[in-house]
Image 1 (cartoon, rainbow, N blue to C red):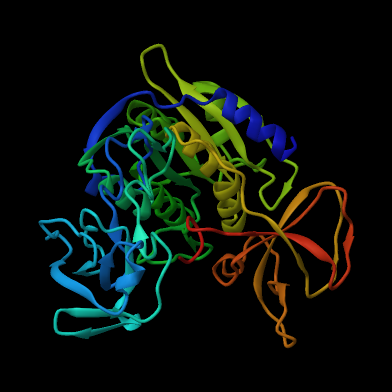
Image 2: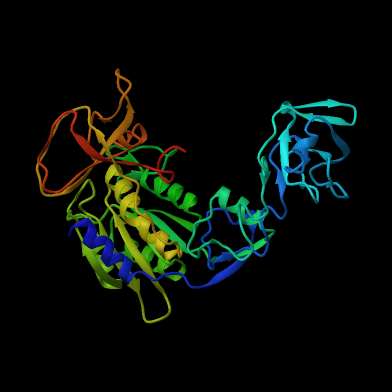
Length: 408
């Protein structure tokens, strides 16, 4: 199945969370807004100075050599009075502009002689003043429902005076790996064994996604253990993500168990790496029900499908309004020759060449078992299904990894 068709099918079939809760702004990082946020105030609430200097009336140019200093306005301590003809007030950055004043001149363009202030360069009206509501006006919709809240978003909400906001409840995601050859890091590696890494990658991505997780460990390659693990996941999770066991080997039971306990939406995609990817759902006669994502066992295949297929769907399940992925054209350093037929995500690094121009440099190996190709790269070169050859220096589509699997 083509990736675009698979994405559309998954987004149609998954259940989007509908329950909400009220949380403090301090605890809302990476949560998803469950309602539009409107401002009940102007931000800033009053005209304030953008500079340290003096506030006065623009029409008083005739007094430019001798404005009378009558007080000062500090941030949080406004001047309690009115500026009249020929008068000025010492003002600090962020301080409220006094009544009557309509202009501020920075102190570098002034000269003070006791209470007599000389304006060396006369400004236009409104100079160096930040107007009330310049950032946000009362009644503005500041942030739409479905926004995943960034640190700056939280600051903006706090600037409105809001201490709590409504967000969607966290979804629950269970993670397990399948394979007799797998051993967790720190364990004794037997002959024929390999250390399991897919679960840690998946759980780490989920931590950045801010969902509830349960690590179900490694499940042995047999039907009974796999069934028991799936039933346990169903009783708790909204989503089960597995890695391995979805190919066509004699010891791959995931697909068979999925057919017994639920249904398969699709299996096998026209992408590279990540062909043996499965999607479906688990359910029983009771209330237990969860979505299923079966990642391939090879670590690069698992990471790419987690990032490009599972992550967007989980975001949607959280109530987030999805945005287009950031992709741009950039020259590639080396030529590529390949077999057409699958959409391919080749790992690459965006950097500057000797001429100081940006280009992408493919990682030395594109094997689906070389996880260092993800760790040492910062994005994908995306090659369309029908392309067999790309020439050196040709412009290609490059997609940065972003914050979920890349370095921040």
